[in-house]
Length: 251
Image (cartoon, rainbow, N blue to C red; front, top):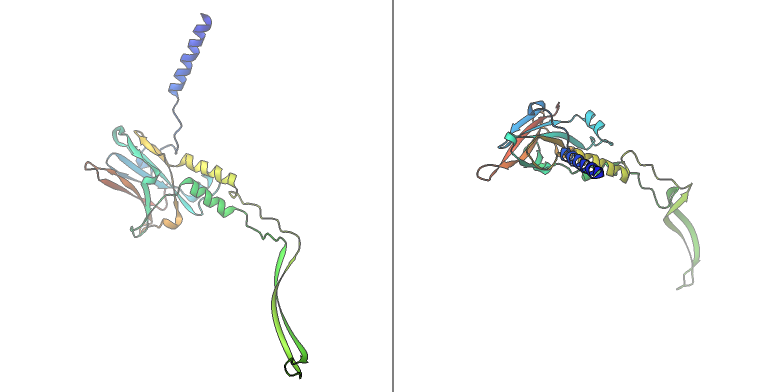
């Protein structure tokens, strides 16, 4: 009986422990209120907020620097009255200055692959060593007999050619820079995924990062980046976009 009672106690304790555990969500911990971000805007069932992460800070957040090609935005979602609403990183776009074109954020694999490609070792010639390309020309004099008439003839001739000379010891390939290996790519991708804005249906505040190519992100005349949530369905089932003019210098 003692063993049976002890087993029941262990099972009960395990069940309580499991009940108290919550899966660790992806993303980052949301700030206390929407007002703690650089900009906020209200939608039908939620308030959205965003800040641009300064490059100096973004460089310290991941194993390898992505700020040469990407901007990092911290985006948060605050549902109204605990209404469960679906949110997805792909619901956000960034508009160009003229507002006529928009771009979705880059997924973590694309970002990590771009960094890995940029820092990968340069390819070397399969021939190895130093390779020299040489050009040469020839001028000469010759004499002989014309086979048709039997008379002696004289003249000059010219010629040209291209030669390749190989010499020196084989050149070893360059060592990859930080972020330039496949292992580095996988590690960076994991970090970017874990901190990306979560996707799903939530009745509580969530936050995370979005990664936009710098080439697609142009400031407007006020120095803001035009970030837009593509919209929530209104009472008529029509999506209403939510615009966030994120200052280029955010907090």
